[in-house]
Length: 446
Image (spheres, rainbow, N blue to C red):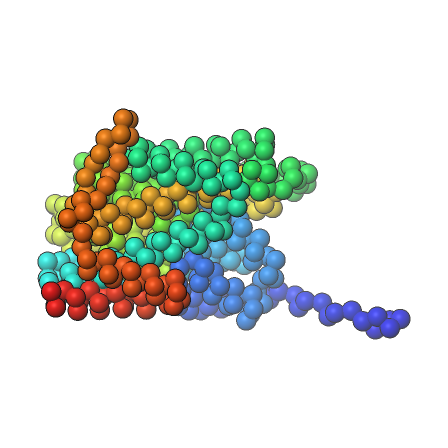
């Protein structure tokens, strides 16, 4: 104290964890990381900022903003960045893998059980309720993301335009995302207020640009990413289901901005409509399973890869093919995440000050609202109705329900799930459990 004025004590210096400490903490986070990205990020914040003081709050938020720039699951990439921050590539691999592996193991076990139990009446009854609950969960995601992302008239118009492009014209998902990003780049320069951005570009930073290290990382991790695909191409050929799984999910890893709900819209277009690996109801089942397990929600892709290979197993047994399909899906989904983090983490400060890049991200985020709205409409049509009709509207096609095929049980369960989520504020796992039990009871009574 000097001159009667007291100063607050300085924040304690961040603590650097040892590699074994980092592994122990992220093993715990990986097992407990339920609740989607918001809950997972909150858990990481409590563990590494509040309880252990490894990072200052500003550092954590700075890294989280950086992860939002990248395709793929932001929570898993944040875990990878934290490990990289303290122990380089070894730490990044440890933290990133421990965040994913527990959930991947559970999803794999559930996928096997799902494939083996298909066709059983009691099993179908449980998943009647789960599909209905997933519809309410997707609607909740739509409301939550729209409330956060659509804060200008331009963003609302862009989201509506994306919904029309997907629902009426069935334009390819990657094309829509790329177009939104290019529009964001242009608007950030021309009318940044339309995207609710701040001023222009920050002054150039003095730190050297790490080009050599970034190019080396891209070469190494690009080879890691491509290695199993090359092996499959040489041994099984381009017509095998494993090659198609690898190519589809590699493509998805590049354009998967906006989280698992946006990814599901792309998967529905490819896995259901193009390749016919799954039915619309099975896509909803997979999301329901992923909602009940730890780890990133994008692990729903492993369920898709497993079933796709299970159903076209030659020259393997169905189980072995399913295991290979699930493992390949995880590889080409998460190897790119490590590529993005290890390549761009040294550029963190520069990326945070790139206004045009922020504009592209803001436009893509707004577009994702339209993508999820399309997913909600698609799920609603296929969960609540046994049949749909296609009505031509010039160059567009409108998919409408066949009203006599309405499933009143699914409708009742979806309404109860929506009540539990929006009014009673139940968590997702409780809602899924209630809906599954309700589906079993209703089917048994009927």
